[in-house]
Amino acid sequence: MNTTSNSRPDVEVTDDAKATKFAVPVMRYIAAGLGIVAGLIHLSVTPENFDEAFEFGLFMLLTSIFQVGTSVWLVFRPSRLLVFAIIAVNAAIVLTYAVAYTVGLPFGPDPGKPQTGTDLGSATTLGEIILLLLLILVMVALVRRGGFHQIPGRARIADAY
Image (cartoon, rainbow, N blue to C red; front, side):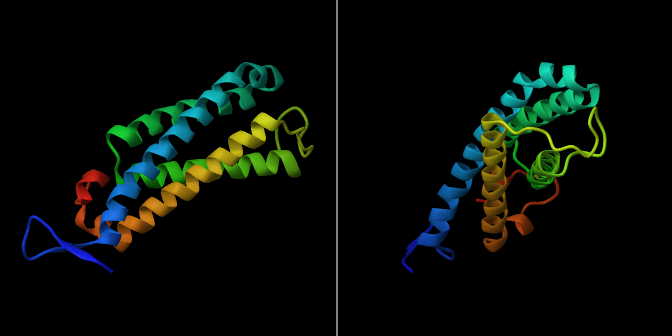
């Protein structure tokens, strides 16, 4: 592991630390892009979901608002709480998709009947899974570097560096 000196003489910065400092924002930006795309796709299918069942349309509308809003927030004001919220909600969205298209949801026009999947739905869910993995890697990288422990309260992830 190579080290180079930092602007502070008492602190050494490793190549791994430099790579993490570069990789974390890149992963965050890619995750935000995936979240915006998923949110826009959910918004585009909202009308047909409202036609199927009010609760399905409402779910798609709220999902799209959450995904686009938190993705923009992730770019400009990242925080621990935001990363945790994005992971939790997107995991719930992926789980809901899996249930809806395998065993069927327990409510709606056809309770317990699996819905017919689409390529767009599968691609969106794949993007959400990649988003989850990227944000989990962001959290792991920051915890390994002590970033989460060094950020007080509502400080931004970017402040860990």
